[in-house]
Length: 66
Image 1 (tube, helix red, strand yellow):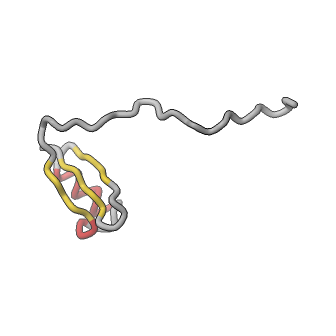
Image 2 (cartoon, rainbow, N blue to C red):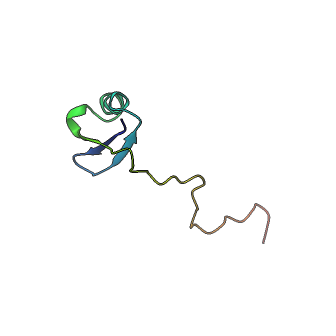
C-alpha cells in the first residue's frame, strides 16, 4: 500500500509506492526515520503529476543578440 512521509520540521511531503521504500528514503536521504511522520495513503487518493514543469522566469537572450 502507498505511503506518504512528512518531515517533522519543514512539512516536506513525499509519496512512495510502499512503506519499505519510504523508510529506506527517510533513513538514507532524510536524516533518519525519526525525522518523518509516516502515513498510509488510501488507494483512491492520487498525487497530481507534473510532467513538464512550467518556468515563470523570463527567457534568457542568446549570446550576441543586442
